[in-house]
Image (cartoon, rainbow, N blue to C red; front, side, top):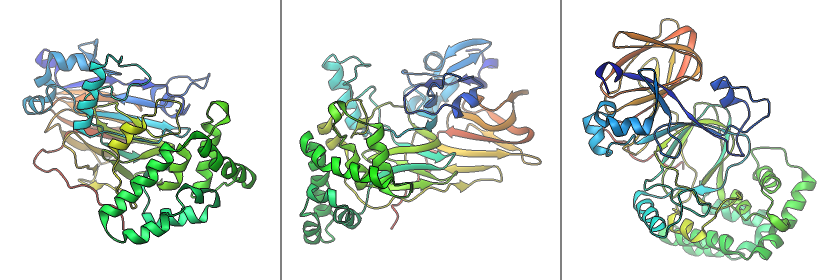
Length: 431
């Protein structure tokens, strides 16, 4: 890669057309007509081999994973190239959930490496529907809402679960002794985790006929009542039953999880962090998502895709309680950063306007930026690029740049590698 080509690259992200995707947000960003209402679920901006972005290098289109293979130090910088073995460590996404996503969790590094090697040894193709591990990496996730976002995140407090099991008559047979056992567990953390694990294992291993016997009357009642309040778990349980019918009229056991997990409503600008083992699902809304570069997903229902209950149970954390929302930390008049306790990434929101220019430097590795509102100019090494809404770029390590609004104001999000000497602690759970 010639030196005059190694500063800033225009990127073209890869679109994923999953069935749950929206029809307008991502096509609008990319200026694509979508008259047939095809779902545009995710825009990937990264170098994951399943769907790498395309870089414009000297007028030539090059897949980003290939560019990194050819010139890892020029793009990543020597230190990051060594730390991350020549790979871009993060994957930036724009996600638009029109329908509910599956209940899911992600593995830690050890489990991902072992599972990937095991499935490779078994000869399971990477694109096989029964495959759990499509790469060897973990997948911690940080997300910030662009619209109002509804999601499930982690197990509710055990006292809240006990109240729910007692208040929803159809759910009482799931574990009738739960309240009594919770009193016995008291405040002992291990006893509480063991009880929660037994409850979740019970619903995941429950024979399908018993799942139907419990959920059929619940869904029938909700259909009569027609709950409309998105703050109510019943609303999402009914929607899940409508969106995820199983063959033969059976019920998806993932509906149980809607009553066991925290229901969150996020306003634009609020975020959450999903570490390994935390059960979660996006229900509705659009967000910016940043994660370690991986596509490893272990599902727990609300999906026609593969569910491996044993592998999921080995993955899950059975901590309980409400998660804290991440509001972001102002770094300057133009930048707010959202940090996570990982070495691969941090996410920033950058807003520029009249009299508000942003100065940046890709200090610890390459930075990926996408314009979500307005039109911006990016100046670096004596060149100025005009970035319309939806445009994305990669700034190579060590490169300085400046961003201004071409007119009015512009809103961008930036993925970066954090300072390796300033790794934050895990975000606390809410009291």
